[in-house]
Amino acid sequence: MGTLESNGHAQGESTGTGRRTLLGAAMLGAGGAVLGLPGAARADTQQTGQDAKHGGGGLKGLPVPTIIGHRGASGYRPEHTLGSYQLALDLGADIVEAGDLVPTKDGHIVCRHEPEIGGTTDVADHPEFASRKVTKVLDGVTLTGWFTEDFTLAELKTLRAIERIPANRPHNTLYNGRWEIPTFEEVLRWQDEQTRKRGKQVWIYPETKHPTYFRALGLGLEERVAKLLKKHGKDRKNSPVILQSFEPTSIQRFNRLVGNPLVVLLSAANTRPWDFITTGDPRTVADLVKPAGLREIASYAQGIGPTLDLVIPKDSNGALTSPTTLVADAHAAGLILHPYTMRNENPFLPTNFRKGTDADAYGDAFGAYRTYFATGIDGVFTDNPDTGVLARKDFLSS
Image (tube, rainbow, N blue to C red; front, side):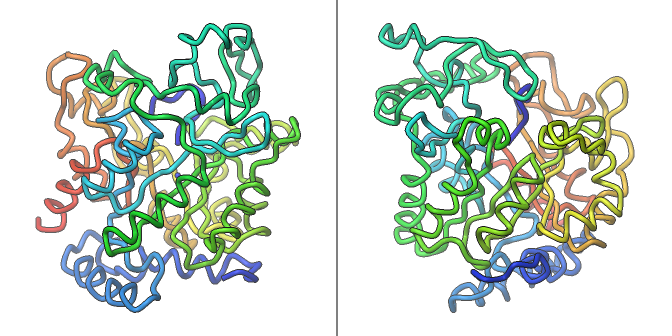
């Protein structure tokens, strides 16, 4: 989840309607949850939990608002590691974003926030890979570093993950070097293992990163991901894997390949998805969040993952203003909303919820959650799943 510059989304059903109904049940079936009526949300969770216990229900078994561990529990561990994913479950996340998917030189799919791994691994400490440092243009942005597509899987497995934003999370650097880069197939096996151990279905929420860029390199993501999902029997409408991408055409491609729930990620209103830029589509995100744009998305996807600023914009000082109509408009189109990203630290919170000035100090995250939940969003990505779970409890009991 997140763009390049961000620190911080049954086999045979070819139409979006059936899956949209399924995924939307987490929002529409909750009834009062969408309107901020906590009693109805709790009742829906209990009822659909019984459905899930008997092998059905799909996403209807998830609580609303859904707490999604962003890259795992990345507020406490280096992101996109099995350690981060594991902790997210331990802290109560309903879904784990495992992971951001990028390819290797030999066609394997691994979990990294970006293909450039200089900031998320110890590759710079490996002299044998010094010559791999190059400058590339990725989705119009010039980057210098080390890229997954220039490494074989065996080579990547010699690296270890490190904290991506140590200035804000110095405590996470304690865990630098502890975990390797997981493959997506390892994540699928981990999901099954955790489901058995915990006695309940574990959900994951992988994202295809820069699919147009990788397709041009002959490393198309969607077909490789679909093949793995089919291999593990997780390519159906009730499968516990939600697929997401910032590129609508990636989601459209998935809509033809698999039956999984699908979500289109949406960045700032004035931006254009990279696949739109490459194909000459003039529309911006502002166009996509209009009722007509949302109806089009609903023809092939079941949800959207907007930036929180699309739900409640900020003023010039960074404070929250009034909510937009996006929640109501998306729900009217039959879409759920899982916006991103809640973080506890001051720099990532709206200014009216910050406390003090320390870069790694926590602000009033609970107040921010309460404000966003009140808009009727169906869930939220968070780096701190335990905070999200407590905030949901407070919101539903208020």
